Length: 587
Ligand SMILES: Cc1ncc(C[n+]2csc(CCOP(=O)(O)OP(=O)(O)O)c2C)c(N)n1
Image (cartoon, rainbow, N blue to C red):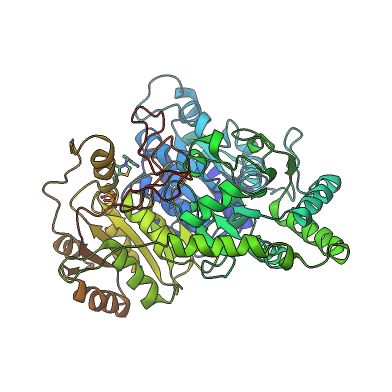
């Protein structure tokens, strides 16, 4: 039997196991939405903005590990996806975005709502397709899902002209794909893995530097086994948080610009750095010349182009982190029998790390009158027992969440790490909630960020998603204000958020629940009430507008020279210092 392009799309998505599509219709995709009208097995979630749809697809993908799917119209619908596509590209998130396109014969005519989305999205997708013939459609969809989810995952876009959605052909979905020029390496090189095992057994002061690739590869068990087997302390990037339990004895927490002192110092002093699914991002390395300056470096990554891109590497291993770690653990178990007790060898290293932990723990001072933002995060952690899926936007609140919510499990901290997109967190939370209706999902946001996609409150209410939003309301674009205070002599140019809406009333206007805390002793009650209500809730925490995120490595500075709450020399030979204000790195 012949099917139309729309029906082929629907049947193909079913074959791929898609259960949810996030989107917003328009002229050229009405046929597709019409085909979806009676479909029971795929839920279509109508968002209020296409950017919301893409971030929801990202949240769904990050929380589940399965590809997120979005469907939007041509022209403005398609261009509204660009931030989300770039975001997904930077964070290696597998999403498949279907954009409508004007009819084939009108492409290039400046037709109404025409945009060259294939051209526009080329630099921000892993791959993109323009479907020219309905006969190719099933094959293209199969390839799109394959490319999005294999190798280093990423966003794939399928541009579907209106006439193709109506044209008919026989439907046959391919069983498998093979793309000649695309063959990701899964298994690591055995000889290199052996070299890595040897280096690990010899090291006196090793560190595991764990990135988002470990989460993407679902390699949390393997990373834990490696750390425990070899007794190596672990530090994680923002994207890696949750890949290793934050409360584990071997955890040093996050490293980098707002990382913990012990993590940054350990990386500076280590004799072996094992980078796993991490890409030496500038927020992690600070001044590259001073990052891990005196050690051997092992780098494990599925993407060969990330290896040696930003940093010198002694032992590169290309492969799927899960497979490589399995082999590495195996090799280490073998070499252990010949190498005696590692714990003993590393005793002085652990003593040093403990000393650093005590010397510079994460600190803040909660007084009686004003709510400190860190206090809110600590309370959220305590009252949710660290079991929530947490999403954040971008800014100070994001860094406090990373520092003070001790993530236990992989895929429970959903972030815009690479692009740093304000407005990501709330729709991402809705995407995670769509995937896991029974789980507790919390979006920690700022009063600036939440206003970038607050319209999705309507989606949350209509879908009855009981997402909780915790706004750390400091009346500023806080992270910008912090930089202006530290590097621009308190000139707060365009960072004060005058006329911030009343978030409680705004929540109520959308049909959600609004709660507010203005004093420290109200924080717990507000959170308890939010957790009790089975509806979307917006919690407005009116927090200290002057609080800063510490420790901080000023942009372009060296990680060992962090600024603490009270900038003062911390090591005789390693003075804390402020940044070079002309640094090329940005807020
Ligand atoms: C879309 C977008 N625009 C601008 C920025 C630059 N930026 C980074 S943090 C920040 C301030 C965020 O303010 P808010 O959401 O209130 O969070 P806070 O820092 O106060 O916690 C800005 C403007 C960004 N990251 N994303």
